[in-house]
View 1 (spheres, one colour):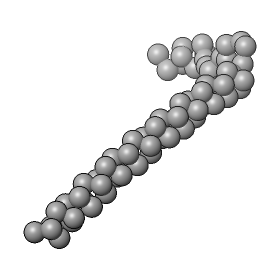
View 2 (view 1 turned 180 degrees about the vertical axis):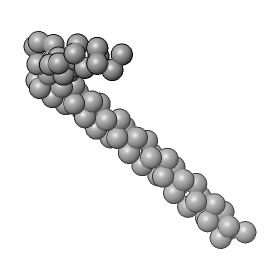
View 3 (view 1 turned 180 degrees about the horizontal axis):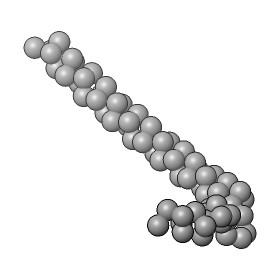
Amino acid sequence: MGDFRWLARVNSLNEEKLILRKLDLDRVSNRLRDKLVAELHNLEQETSPDYPINTFPKNYSTVKKNTS
């Protein structure tokens, strides 16, 4: 019976270690995600123009009239 108690203790310790490791990995992945989101936001702010970009073709009004 003593061998089984030892095995149960080892399994519970391993389970605790796995839970702690998973919590550590979750914490690290959340920090990494937050850093990536911040970097992407900064990159978007740096690369976006300060003026609106016209996405319509130059002759949009004539194209629209011809298709109507």
